Image 1: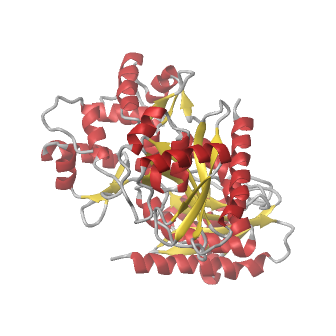
Image 2: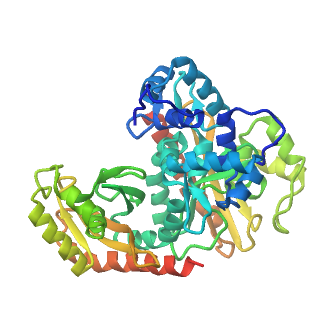
Image 3: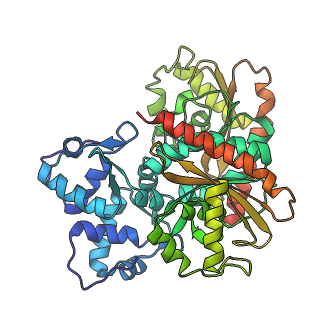
Length: 252
Length: 252
C-alpha cells in the first residue's frame, strides 16, 4: 500500500495515503514511517497527521507513535458488512457456538482472500490463526473454499494458478482443488484438514443474499483429532441457511 | 455533526466532513443529504465522493445512495479499542456468556456516553437495546454507572446536572445517583433495574489498565424477573478482573 511519491495527487488522496499506511502488520507507526509508507514529504505528513488527529481519525500515543483512532473505528462499524451481515449473523453464530463449543467464524471474500468478519471462541476451543479483519488464503481455509467455489471463473483460474502451500497438507494441486470445489457446490459444504494450521480441521457452508449470490461463509474449526467432523456439517449448514433467511427477511 | 458552510476549511477537513455526515441514524445517504449534512456545495461533495468511493472509504449502492465502505471498516479494526481491548476481552466475555447464557457487554466511556465495543447474546438472552458502536447514557446503564463512578469530577458534575429519564425507573435524582456511584466504587460493581429498558436489569464491573485507570466496563443484562441478580455480580467481577490481568500482561 506504499504510495508513489512521483505521481500528482489531490489533497484528499494524500490524506487517504496517510490512512493507507496502516495495516495489520503496521497498526502503530511513527511520523517518519508514515511519510515513507505514504510516499509523502515529512512536512506534508506532519500537517496531515495534525488534521487527522484533531478529527480523531488517528490518535497519537504517549510514545509519539500514531494509531487508528476511535472515531474511524466507530465510523467503520456503519459499513454494511458490519451493520447488515455481521448483525444478522451473530445470533446464529452464537447458536452454533453454543451447540458445539468450537471456533465459529464468518468470512467474506475480498479479492483473492477470505476476510474474517467475526469469530467466536471460548477458552476450550482449539487455538487458531484467525482474528476479525484478518485475510487468509482462499484455498487453505474452509470458508475460503466455499467462497472460491462460488467465485467468478477468472478469479478461480487466477487462484488455481498460484496455490502456495501454507502447511504440508495444503492442497496445491489445481486439478484436485478444482474437483474439490465441484464437491463443495454439490454437497453444500467444504472441509479442510491441517491445510491452514496443523492439528485443526474445519467445515464451512455458504450464506446467500436475496439475489442468490454467495456473499459469506460460516465455518466451524476444531481439533483434527475430533472423529465426527462430517457430522458437524449439518449444524454449520443449518446456521448458514438461518443467516441466509435472515438476510432475505431484512431486505426491504 | 453538521458542518458550518461559512467557515474556511482545508480540503482534508472537507473530505472528513463528508465522512462525518454518516452516523448511527444516517448510515445510508444520498449525494444531496451528504452535501447538506457536511455543509458543502453539491459539486464539491460530488468530487469528494468520487475520490472517497474510488478508495473504498465509501461505497455507492445500486440505488445511488452511499454507505461506509469495507476499507474503512477494515481500517477501523486496527484501532486499539478493537485490536487491544476487544481482543483481550473476548475470551472472557465468552466465558461469562457460557456460564450465564445472558447478554454480555463490553463498553468504554466516550465523553458523557457509554460506547458499546462488544456484545454477546444467544437466542435465549433477553432482547436489549445495545449494539456494537451504539452510545447510551452513562446514568441509565450498568456499564455507564461503572464508567461514571471512575470519571473525572467535572464530568460527573456535568452528567449529574442533566439526568434525563429514559424509563420511569431511571435515576434522575443527582443526590441518589452520587450515593450510588460511591457504592459502585466501594462494592466494585454497579446494578440497574428497568432504568434503560423496562423488564431488564444489569450488573457491571470495571476493567482497569496497567496504570490503574478504569478503561472499560463489562456487564451482564438479564430479565428483571431473575431473582438472583446480586449473585451474578461475582461472575461479572471475575470476568472483568480477568480482562484487567490480560491487559497488564499484554503491555510491553
